[in-house]
Image (cartoon, rainbow, N blue to C red; front, side, top):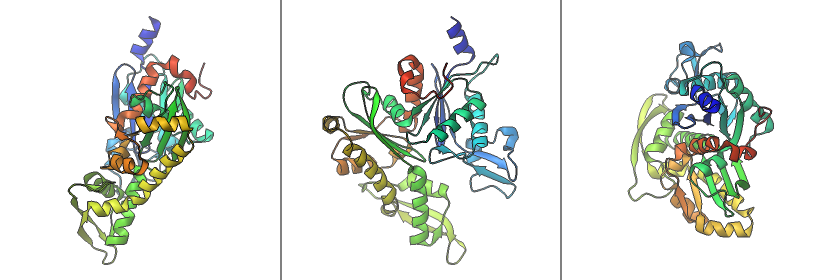
Length: 349
């Protein structure tokens, strides 16, 4: 009875703390917040604009468009916290926006983090979450959360393979019997793909464009595999030779070429994980294949390319952007079952 009352007053939270986006789910209610991981500041100060509300979608609209008196920043890079104070402010805002809190109670929080972060980086997540208003804090690897969220039978004695391509990192893992058998995390994701497009436009079109424009090109005409009907898109930028604005027409073939290197890095990461796996589990992959999650999984034809390159079935999970937070929420719902698989730091009692 007391447990139910506490849960009603201050429900526990599942958080996917991503480089590009942060998602929050409330236990028993589902996803209640999905916001960009961006904070806008008064330049030269540590004061968040809008009385502390220039966070998330509002702050993202300011990226690359702020006057000299303001600056919009991401507190995370490559999946880890680079600015503790801003991350704390961002988490506090998201936690308050996503859930109700009453009578001074602090929610238990399960946070999905990259598998390759260091103990120091983990401690930064614990500290930021606690200062932002969390009570007990638990960490789960993004690959495990993605496997749970994708509905894979990770507790069974068979190989389940997941690749989560986020904004700052790519997580690849083979899971069996409720634990990770082999995993690898590389700091390459959607951000590196966007930067590759920026560099390609500069080298081949003598056109300087912003990262957000590059992301739009990736979303509108980007692909990893030849399309049945190739696409084109107009793009505006600064001519690096004349120094004046101009437009250019870009094709999906050109964007595919721009994305070749980061996609190859992801493929090599997957291959290296498979090579480290025991033969019995590799045999399972021939039937069970690979599941793609994360925003990067939305790139057209990525599953087809991986199927061709890896020789195993590849599918994109339903709603890949929310797979990790859904898995984290399931873990929170069954905390007693998953507690031993989580990192509780010094907060567990």
